[in-house]
Length: 329
Image (spheres, rainbow, N blue to C red):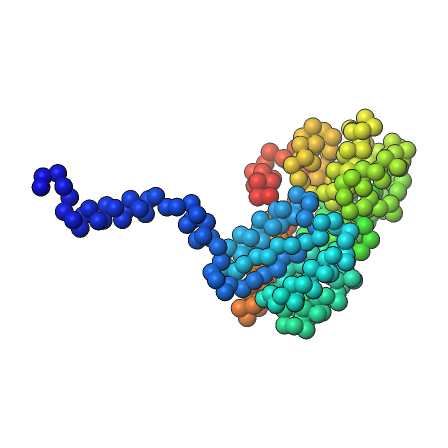
C-alpha cells in the first residue's frame, strides 16, 4: 500500500525511536555499579562542611569510573573520634573491599586501621596524616601538602603586613594532623620576621564554625588588636568571619583563611578576607579511590599523592587556573 514503510524498515524506525526516548531511570541505572561490585568505604572527618561534600563528589566519580560501589559515611561533628572509630569498625565487620579514611586524630585512628589490615582490608589515608608508615601501615596518603599550604598563607601574611605587625593564629583542634601542619608551616614563616609579634598561637577554635565564632568573640580584645589573622580550615575561617562581622571589624585586620567554600570566596570578593589557601577536595576524593582500586588490582601505587593547593587573592581570582579550581569543587 502506498505511503507505508516495508515491515523491516518500520521495525527499524520503532527501534530507533525507542532508543532516542531513553527512560531517565534507565540512564541512572547505567551509572550504578554492577551487582556484586566491590564496596569501598569512604570515611570523612565529618559530613557538614562544604569541603567534605566536594571530597564525596570526587570519590563517587572515581567509583563510577572503576565500577565500584562507594559507601560514604562519617561522623556528624569533626570532634567525634569515638563515632569515627565505630564507623571504621562497622565497615570492617561488613567486609568492605577497601577503606578511604580521613582520620580525625592521627593517633586514635591507628588501632582501627591496624584492625582493617589484619582483616586484609587495605586503607588509603586522605586529607590528614595518620601516624605510621605509608606502604606498611596503610597503602598511601592522598591530600594537600599541608605544611606547604601553611607556609603559603604565612608568606602572603608577611606580604600583606609589610613584614611587621601583630598576628593572631586560631588553631583547629588537637590531634588533627592536617591543621597542625598548616599552623606550624604558618608559624615558621612568622618566626622568620623579627618585627612580627604573635598575639596568640595556642588558642583552639573547635570543630564547627559556631564554636570558632564563640572562641573569637571570647577573645575579641585580641582580635581588635590584631593586624593580621590566620585560620587553618574552613570552619575556623567562617567562624572568625562571623565574629568580625558581628563586631564591625571586617577589613580592620588582614585576614588569611584556609579552604574556599562559596561563602568564603564571596567574602574575599567583598574585601572581608584578603587571601584563601584553596585545596582541591574533589581531586583528593577522586585520586584516593583510584589509588585504592589500583592497589587492589595489584598495581604499584605512590606512597603519597599531592592533590594540590593554590593561594587565591583578589588579584588572581579571575584567572583561568583559579576559576578552574573553584568550579571543580
